[in-house]
Length: 344
Length: 253
Image (tube, rainbow over the protein chains, first blue to last red):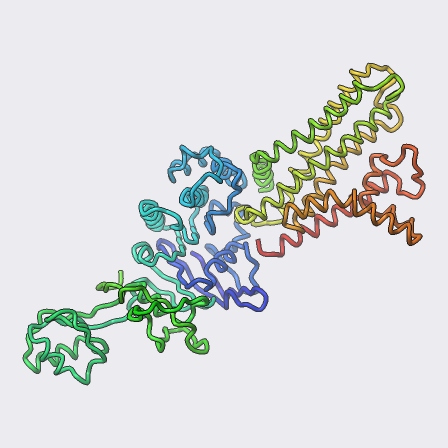
């Protein structure tokens, strides 16, 4: 278990991590999300003692990082796949890491085999692609078979097969009771991989909860209704619905209304319903809404793609006001993301 | 844990090709120059062991400077390629990690210098083939041992500058230009000001006194004795290393 308490890190006048507290539990993959510049990487570096925080502490199974005599056997961290001397071979990179914590040489061969780098292990790292370096980084994390894993964007540079492999490995580790904290910008991947989420913005905690709960709390919700008498139904609901989006001749999405109200109105007017369901947006939708006003470097909206942007007046639960909206956010072209039933 | 840190630093030092190449060049340069000079020597040159020690030490100074450059590169490489981060993630006690790097680099450079000195001396003695040349001549043995010690101190100085500069070019420039340009300029400046007494406190001038570099035909009465000069230089180097280590310990990795 990882406990982060009141972590505060400043770079001069700039507050990168602001009194951040959260917990990461055993046996679960916990996703660490936040916009660019939100302080994810700084938090991770502070957690393993690489950056010196001004305040706060991190405990791994009750002990600070520096108190672990052989940390690679307790905490494996991959903060950047580029932290390798380019003139050194992958084999030698892992050899020195293993030697530093008294791990047997045979373990180096094992992890190289696991990540599929054995055939190129004697090549210098400067000849590696980004994906190969990422695999080497993951090998270094696995070297000491640690109980806790901290990974910053482990999917960077990996092909789809590699991304799937990372997902499977991390879920396997969590299944073995290990503690896994992983940051990623691939929200669809996070939706498939993570059990819990920690979302931060401007160095402060926005939310911490299971993925499904996060989506329910923050994503857009609407009622989908399918009826052969759609026109009568929407007329009957006038005044009780914020907006109506017609999908086709018999289907519409109703915003600002509950399934109960739609059902009661339909029953009262004796309107036949073929479908009446609550729809929830994706994790991406929830993330964009939750972090709408916390992005440090927000791009301008793509013209004609405003439909996917979070509303300017949306304020996520638990997040204090920061002096009004910042920028206009980014919206993917082509409208809102496809809905899912429960956010998982 | 410290034993593991030592093993890790040894692997790091010996698995970069440029370190090897530079070390081989440093050792081979000294060995070849000493042997070629001995081979070309007339009957009047190198009459005693002290003469030969002067040659070995004079050429050896180039060797130990190049070996110190290896120490600089081994340290700045950690900053340039951010390998200091996995190092501190594996060895959270930063002082322990830095001390292990210090021990490995200093000992390696001292051993390589000792090999250079022994091979150069034995080879040159064999070529000269003179019974008058012995290690017990004057201060020959002490002079050669002082070169080995100076090599360790220069290695430490290189690492100190590397930790403070965090940049190979800057650290190497200071390491090499300090004795040959900066201290010469400062010595001249002190003379102009009539403060010749300060010259003996210039670190390299004091450090080079360890190997009696300025004894031959020059007035050394204003300089520190070899022992005091060596102790003074060691204090400066240790102070700089502690400053560099403290900076590395306190700053973000």
